[in-house]
Image (cartoon, rainbow, N blue to C red):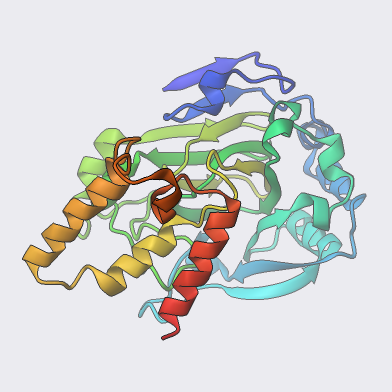
Amino acid sequence: MLEHRGLSAEALPTEVLQSTEPVLLRGLVRHWPLVQAAERSDADFCDYLRRFGPQTRLSLWRAGPEIGGRFFYNDDFTGFNFRHETHAFGALLDELLAGTPDALYLGSTEIDNAFPGLGHENALPALAGLRPHVSLWLGNRMQVAAHFDLPDNIACVVAGRRRFTLFPPDQVANLYIGPLDLTPAGQPISLVDQARPDLERFPRYAEALKHVQTFELLPGDALFIPSQWWHGVEALESVNALVNFWWRQSPAFMDTPLNTLMMALLSLRDLPPAQRDAWRVLFDHYIFDADDQTAAHIPPAARGVLAPMNDGSARQLRAALRNRLNR
């Protein structure tokens, strides 16, 4: 487990921002006004947030107490065990302070659009050059299943306690991933209840637990989560909030590889084994093992999509793919 204390929000070392392992950053944002208010009381925290658009209407998830705070699928996997609602931000804060028995979850909500000024007062200058996407997450005691994100992520707990359960990307076969095309929030999730794993139903999860990293964060603590690390999150208090910063180390013109995976399901998975093996060789050659010699035998002006990609060539390739898919 990698852990740092005393790092400044003004400058973070490269070894943190480019780490391939999670990094716990104790006290990184404890100086934020948001955290200072939460440390005084839940009421002070909500009063502070109320300054930034109490009438703003936001989409949230709600479920009854019977789900035990675990947002998940319904019993037959035709939908989910929660419903979407729209509420004024101030009304959500009131309900949290009143101690509603319902499970409430305001998911990724872009701070600059929904809460003007909040990000300015609670910033991570160390990430300014990366132009991160900054979001607020807010709710009461609840659990989000293990999933991965394409961007790198610094998750900053600003109120309550949160427990993060992380697995490296190579544990995917042991996490029992659910449907790829019906997901609670866009990313595939593990079907295992990380708080109470059923090892009879999910026996391979025992192997995943040999590689697990678990972190419990207090207000002011932050956690760097590398791209594609599976992470489940439990909010452990009646008022919990997190601010996260997402950024990609790849160019903005690149599409998500999840689209490639979906296309591969359409075009590769069900081929005869010999043909699938032949395509595996091609993917290794052109993608996974590609280097500056892969297309060196072709004149530079004739390399087409084998040349280094840029914004213009990415747009051309995307248009060509759309035409192929529409035939």
